[in-house]
Amino acid sequence: MKVSHIIYKVDDLYQAVEEFKNKGFEVEFGTKKNPYNAIIYFSEGPYLELLASSGMPKFMKKILRTFGKGKLVDRLDFWDNHKAGPCGVALEDYKKDLKEEIGILEKYKQGYFLMPSRRNDTKGRKLRFTCLFPDELQLPFLMTYFNIDPKPRNFIHPNGVRRIKNISFGTRKEFVPIIEKLCDDTTLTLFIGSGIKELEFEYAAN
Image (cartoon, rainbow, N blue to C red; front, side, top):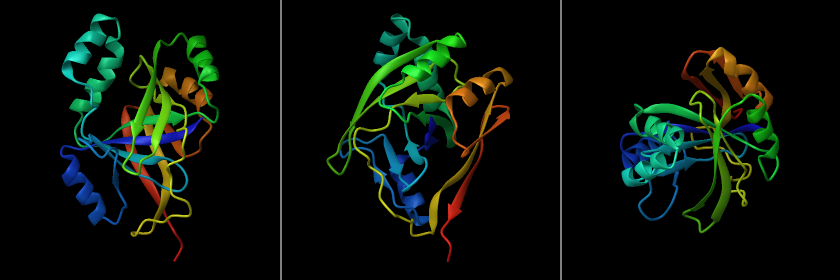
């Protein structure tokens, strides 16, 4: 797997979009109607998802807990209540399913929740994908790649940023071998700790 994207929590979505635009990034809202996220794509490598909320209503969270999906709700609550800044990493498969990754998680006796997902973006693309949320919050969540590639080709942001070069992701020592089995992307640097310590951008040569 490779790094899919970084979840970047924001307090106010519209304000955050303007702030990132002022920093020279091209930003698009996740959906046309009532967006709760916005996307900063790069032609290669992971993208940034500006997230105001998980989009999951409180009553749905209660229902999920009732049906034994409390670990998923814990992850959603973690994102919803996180301070502004990077708060999550997603990995994406090179294939169209997550069978191999499920096998790795089961080998290490890690529980998970598998969920088909969809999003109709502002350009009319009907994006379809599958998400897998490990029970452990210090494991990244997983996803298949979109059925339609939404990334621009040969694109450099107005500020000169070409891609995200490095992501320093902290986790517990016992989870390092699992993540290394799942992910072969050198963009991801692991350390013993918690949270995302650093995002490093690569700029186009002048």
